[in-house]
Amino acid sequence: MSPTYFAGWQFFRIVFATYFRWRVFNPERVPHQGAVILAANHASFLDPPLVGVAIRRPINYLARESLFRFPVVRTVLNRWNAVPVDREGGGAKGLRIILDRLLVGGGIILFPEGTRTPDGQLQAARSGVGLIVVKSSAPVVPVRIFGTFEAFGRNHGIPRPFRVSIKFGEPLLYEDLRTEAKQCSKSRLREIYEEISSDVMLQIHRLEAHRDLTAFPP
Image (cartoon, rainbow, N blue to C red; front, side, top):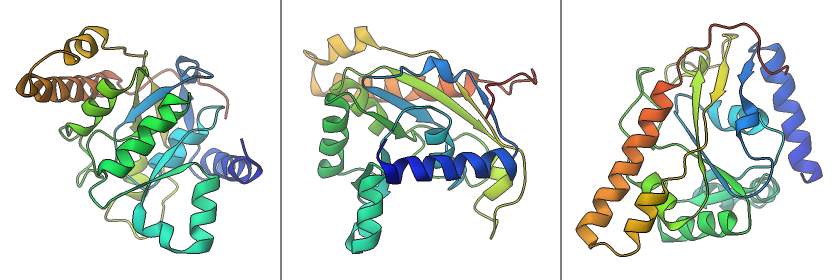
């Protein structure tokens, strides 16, 4: 971690531990090194830092490309391993940077739903995560976030001290679909993108709330 990244990592860990009384479950399922895609549900602006500071390795984040126009903000985002993407969260440039980060063994946080949920419920996945999975060889770790909608959802002006928790699932490889994608038709390729995206969202859904009070210590 760069000094700037480490400072932000420590700051948000303190915030989540004190103000939000967080709990983290199964962070050991995330590889300590090498490429990895962390695919999480999205309910709040709190989600990216929550996922990032719950693990003890640097990770890459997605940030709107427009934010990089400001020199100071751009410097901070670059040191926090931010990937510039367009307003819709995609685009060829953003995709290329994401794949480059994975190619050199980095990790990245993706939100299959594409945008924050309006009502706290899980939404259908977009096909973008399936495309990234196919074009990379990185394992996919499903991540379920609880409580951030209540703490700082779309309708909240300021964060509320609601308990949040995060649970990591077992890594997914999709080896058969990745192999098929190398030699299938374009129509089938689009189906594979959708199939992978839907399954990733299903695996996130299956990570139910953890009733056991024992968790990885913050």
